[in-house]
Image 1 (tube, rainbow, N blue to C red):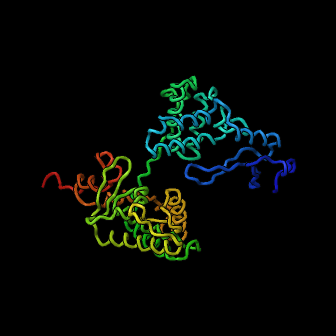
Image 2 (cartoon, one colour):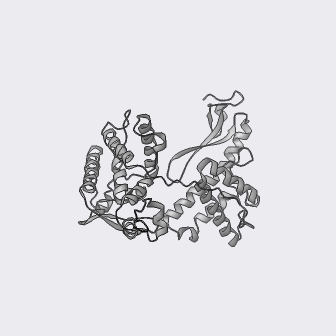
Image 3 (cartoon, rainbow, N blue to C red):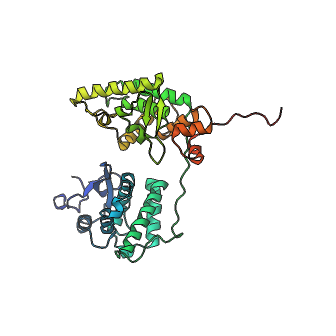
Length: 375
């Protein structure tokens, strides 16, 4: 391994790696809650061997009364376990994002900082840093998690104070990104995805087979991405497609039409081909047969979709199918579907599963056509 001349590669501690890009730096590897491998810089090129060993020791051993220690206790508590799986996943993500953020002390991550050193300036710096690296939304989630964690710890005598007193921390403003892709743009992308999805997997200019059908299912049923990925053969009813919605929205059944029938049939046909090619037995229970599967026959995960969608958007821009300004996300297909739904506000609310006009207004961007005030 090529590394600085003052470092003997044979004496390096475990899980410390050298990156020769730029001025060079030392990094470690870890996995986020979704199992995706990530890297974190832990030292500069000037770090000595003793400093690298101290970094490794800090990563291996969790001192008592540090952030990681408190977070571990919280995760095993009844208060953590009684919340929804979605909230647990969000808290685990926040724990990872906070714990792996570098502190001002070289080679020490925020997760190893003692609880007594957690003051408002430290939390403010953390919120600002996460906002820059992961976005304002993640920063707000991490702030809420830290506040909940320390309140839990204070109530049980694990820490004396919280770094998040009311009104002290300045939270970043989230960017409003309510994009509404043009129907012509969506049509071009669906056709492009259908054509490129038929090419051999992972060849130049190809894209995953599930891109176009996910766009169609999201639009026709006014679904979020995670709701599309949850569709199974059990969702197929005589009267239409059963849509189970997240975030408290009501379930709906989308009546069959030729377009919806076509995409569901295509998804099932492609899934059967993948199962046969991979030697996967077809699950007996309809609830175990997901409509949208990966090339390996597994249920499509959010992380896999985001990665594939990013590459597909890059390909579409490179090929001149869309412009850079016409990029959008899968969630915007629900907005396009809600906007295109015909009828009154009540009709639209029923179709999207929303329980209030305020929630509907986030997705319905249609412009009412009204009569003049007087003839």
